[in-house]
Length: 286
Image (cartoon, rainbow, N blue to C red; front, side, top):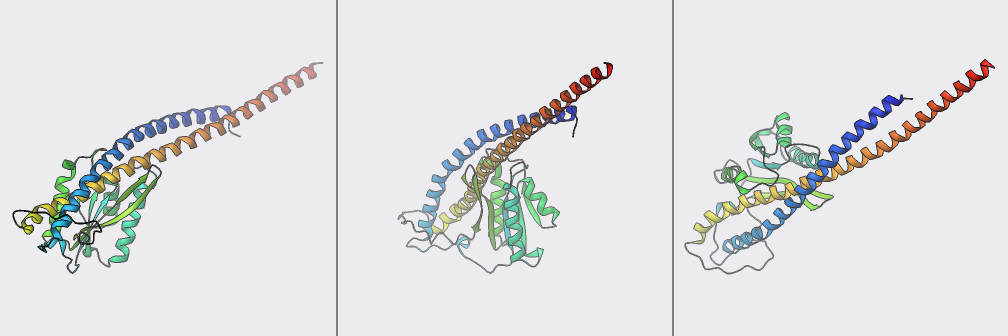
């Protein structure tokens, strides 16, 4: 059995750990509230720009644009959103595992795909695997603005329009609730799902031509998809870290209770032994 000093040291160190995890849980809870609100406020904008884009692309003019047309796939781009740090449960590993399994099943050569990484964890994993990470961004704030990823989003869309990629997918953790997040795969480009929208299309009068409007609108829409996925992913990250830290705090408190019980038993045994030795010594003197 461990000595009283060892058990007391374990209790004190576990208490300090629980204080840290509790503070991290409260910090993540505050970030989670702001992250969820920011993600939700972005939804109406996304719905409206999708409606406008679908109406123009599917209008009577029958506008055609390269970003709306599928072409033979020679190279695929994968935008992977993870966090810059861990301590968030399975948040990062679930996204990375999904992307890794997809790549293994779809591609036979590393020349058939490339990765655009948002977040240090995902970037480091795929670099270590020897995959072609052609662009990455780290150090994004917990409440990101569009300006934080504008350059990356613009260049990602540009790599489709210039023919570097024939299709682009984005992977991220979709926020469902504080205790539930789901890894999501979304086809970013080409925008082939606009015409299949079940919503009623609004008729717009526009000037100049539909093609000229789509030249401006479609890249903005694709960039907005990336930003919306990032906001969604950030909300999931904060929720996952909050839950992980709560579980860590609960486990620490359980350990403290067990260590305290062990300490009390050891202390009682030591007292009993001292009393026995005193009684034995007194009996020997008689």
